Amino acid sequence: MKKTRIWELDFLRGFAIIMMIFDHLNYDFRNIDSYFSNFNEVNNTVFNWLNNTAVLYWSSELRFFGHIFFVALFLLISGISFTFSKSNLSRSLKLLIVAGLITGITALLQEVTGMRVFIIFGIIHMYGFATLITYLFRKLWNNDIFIFTVGSLIIIWGISFEFWQLNYIHALSFEAIPGIILGTKAFGADYFGLVPYTGIIMIGTVIGNVFYKNRVSLIPNAKITEKNIFTFVGRNSLIIFLTHQFVLLGLVYMIGYLFGYRI
Image (cartoon, rainbow, N blue to C red; front, side, top):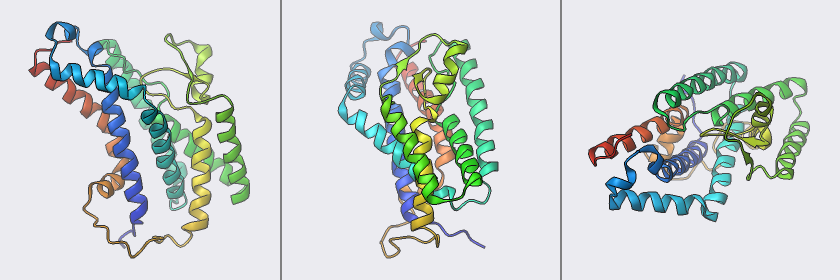
């Protein structure tokens, strides 16, 4: 039996992922001067412009508010999708295995190349643990008011310590790891603590139970083609999210080499 898709969830998830990819591409352009040892010597006008524009973008209010909005949108839809799955425990454990691989691969890459790519607790780590925590809370008491309350308290907790401007740690220590996982400290190329993001996923599950109880689109008559880029990305979000930064970084290095840049 063919699985019925809810087009607006795929569309919005894809939109959020595409904006995350745009954000990560600008991260690469912002740091491109540190990727190549002879960046200043080559002094290519286009690469200099990309670097300068990305630096401006990264410190702008557009990036600040856009980043929070699109991450929240992605996690909210993930929470809605949580209510459609019968194997959230298995799904979260698989994500945690993938997260462990990401940590190992990025640690090896940083050791071999010297690039600052090590990820100890990024968005996949957070997503896996947050899904597991949500699953366990649902097992404890599968009550939407209870889950909404817990999720809201987690978000308020994150706001109370200003999760958007964390203390970035340049040298990893064992004592700092709990704070990195919780979300009170930042470390690595990608960092997402459990607070406040777990709360967003929890509230997403409540929205799923209330508004998508019948698992049908809320806008069934909308004329949206299934072949648009947002829907495609939304339906393949996990594989695209896991691979896109490696692809982007590979393209940056490959194109850079063609213009004479070297590590």
